[in-house]
Length: 130
Image (cartoon, rainbow, N blue to C red; front, side):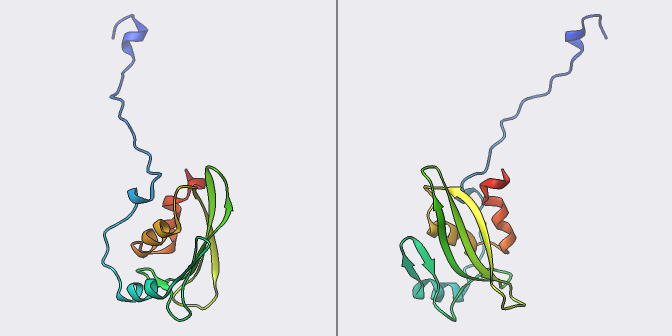
């Protein structure tokens, strides 16, 4: 140790941390479920909203069913995306709202959901959590 206090301070290497705020940063490589291929063929896209046909919802890998993806509040920068879903063990529909950039489309969110294991992975792309 020396008498120079500034010289005694240890300096670590500064690493550049990458903020994962794009949907593509969080997409995992999982096999495509055959039921999702059929559900995507039967879906309706109206006013930028995706509504899945009755009896053919989008399925996640833990068997959670997604019935609808729509955008509630549009802003120039952000938007609120609502996902209507039901867990595999029940029929009660629940709604999850996430905040995303306005440039993200519902097809991007659909692609994220069909490659995710559970509905809780929406916390990864939710901008309210950053």
